[in-house]
Length: 103
Image (cartoon, helix red, strand yellow):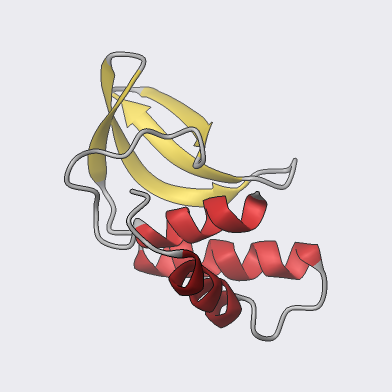
């Protein structure tokens, strides 16, 4: 990740937040495009352990989180803290846009 330029990221953010009024609605817009475009499930490594990302959600504290599992264990991991596999799944560029938006 990190392959998109500032202008591309800003255009993506504008696309995701076009009808948003305020930060909460911008977050919802970004969550929506990530949810619609991120190809799940995919596998990645978290703390040296392979996990499966099954989807994304909005947490109660206002973060976009990845819904991860390993066997019967389930855990939410902040999408900004989630290491992306190489190659990244389709739609991962929206996570990059969210990262840029969140500063």
